[in-house]
Image (cartoon, rainbow, N blue to C red; front, side, top):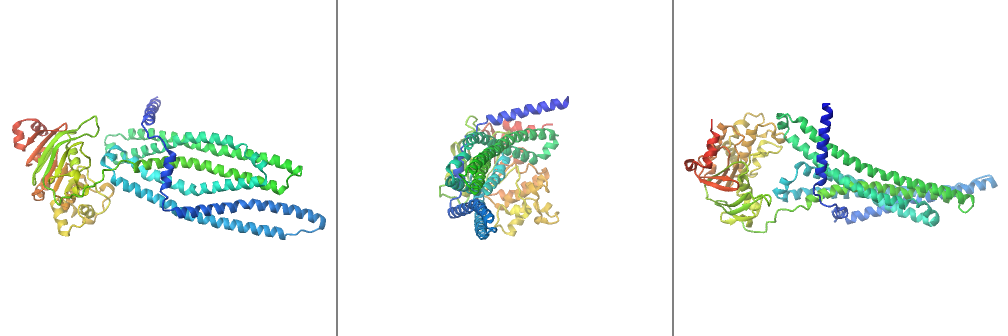
Length: 611
């Protein structure tokens, strides 16, 4: 009974997921447009494509000449049998000549086929390499808002699964398209040359099958698009659950995570099953037409031989060509399904390539150093209907330590994102050293800014490499000064390989506090003019936090400093404290003056130390 209720609950959740995924607004499919975009990547490979097409055409034409000589052999044998009955012997010289000709034809055909596959492999891999490069380059130009709005697992799925799907389809099917078309046209031409009437008879079932095939392809592309979209959802879920697997286990949500996976996986299974079923129907359908045409030729051909209107060799050749003329149709029907899947993947990849990029930096103005920062009537919202920052103004002078405090969602981190130009303001201006940051290139602006985030980011490599990431040209003396100031030297000295210790993926072999210390050392080594600490010591114990603050006093001296903090005890010495609530500055002052006001800041501060 419990299992039945559980199954019913999962089914209801699955139905909800399916309804949601089908009602989501999707970009209308433009498969022809996507195909043109994909083929446009072949620019610069025109000579190789022409050569491959030539080799495919010649190799295919040679291969379809074989059955013609097979008919000649049968006719010669028929004549020789009659000759033997009359004269008692046979002349094998004509047969040897024909066999040698067939051998040469198939040898040349194989050579041309080898060349076309060799060259096409290079063309396709070049296209895929360029596509991966374009996507990777595009990602570096997309604004932060794009990554905030898209699931990381889905983006990863587009870069890996979808591009691999395009690669496999093009590698296996691009040449096949050429050879199938050439085979169909060439064989049909030979058939018409031999007998237009028999040619028409063999193709009688084809029009009906063609109409049915077009209907099937129309529906199959819908399921292929869903298949790759849900594949992205699966990868997104896996990435999310893997990244937070400790939290999942801590709250005993393993079963829930598995259920959610099963729901999405079931949707993927359904869409894939329908897509593959519809694509699989085509091959039996075309084979039926092929066999029907073959039977028609057998019956009509037998009748013509009996009536003496056609010789045996011609009918045998025609029967062989009947099989050959329909095989390209079978191949093209399979290719059409693969192309449906590939174009669905290509559409998802081109969605990234066509996403709106950050506005280009056209200004040539630069600043050599950053000192004062001025926010003037700045307004910003992530969505139009929900304003976050409204009419925000602030002036920070060189050397000041400004702390920004407030409840979650007050807009503290957003202020930093606007200063870094991760997002652009809707109105108002932000100036650094007296210049509007929109008139500066992002590279120049960020060269004077240093940032330490609450969420640490370390890559797989040595501890030294991760610290030197802040300034790869730093001297050993600067490196030593930074690691001592950040209190990294103490714990690294206890490691067997010291600063050459290789960090595991996500730096799992370090504690959260140790990872935070390394990021702080990286920021110190960069020696920025403006330092931004966004909850930078949130993962460090109180004693280490005090040590870091003491060590960074000299670093902060003479620089402009922003500190976003929830621990209000850490910012009591700030020159200016901004108290934010709902996107506005509600209080400004030093710690002592704000405590004397006994307002919003005092309420927050006292709540942290309440017994």
